[in-house]
Length: 174
Image 1 (cartoon, one colour):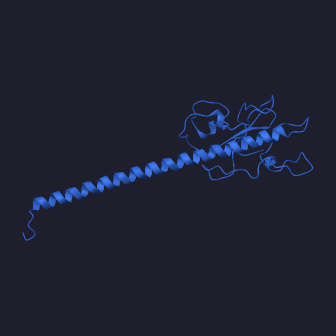
Image 2 (cartoon, one colour):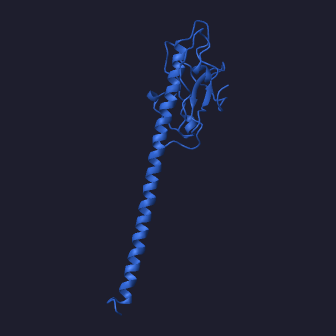
């Protein structure tokens, strides 16, 4: 043997390389998993901000309601162009994109009169953050089992607040 190593020593080198490749592969998989979780957390945070902006627009609509008219719209598009006034009134510039679905469609929760009481994400699956935070515009605090459980409702305006009672119109606006 010209190289000065025995066949037994060469076998340990091969074993060391195999172990090193396995460790590097495991580290890479762990890094991808952590990165994926961080991206999903970020998307959830942006979804909460988008839902909160729609809830604020619903509150603005309610606050600007002329006497004798409904305090909530029947369609999300009415937040973009409030037709109750002779001049253009916008409570929302555009319907925000839900970062979890990549679309500007939201699940809409209607009250018994058919008015929008709140919105929720149409994303499938369960959120990483399992608790609803009322300060973020969630309808109620509690354990979240899916993204649809996090309903964004307008903050209390004056003495009235629209409270969602059911979810008859889950797909978009009426």
